[in-house]
Image 1 (cartoon, helix red, strand yellow):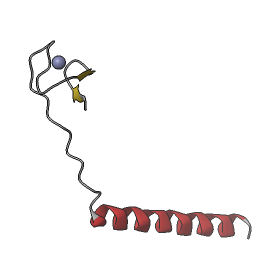
Image 2 (tube, protein in one colour):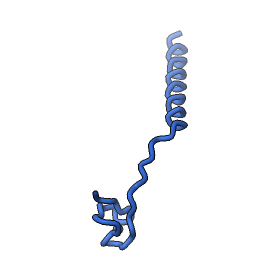
Image 3 (cartoon, protein in one colour):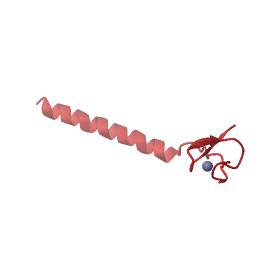
Image 4 (cartoon, protein in one colour):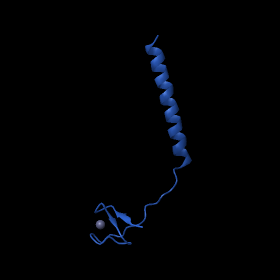
Length: 60
Ligand SMILES: [Zn+2]
């Protein structure tokens, strides 16, 4: 599986980029923290609520 060199912006075969010589490591693929999911859900609910208020204010 090819890694990605951030310096050259190109895929790299192996552990070291053969253009700039920098060692490339696999990007860490951590799952999204639950706090972020909670924050996103709360933000979406808040935006829907504000939109609802705005619409009801405009139509009255
Ligand atoms: Zn490179």
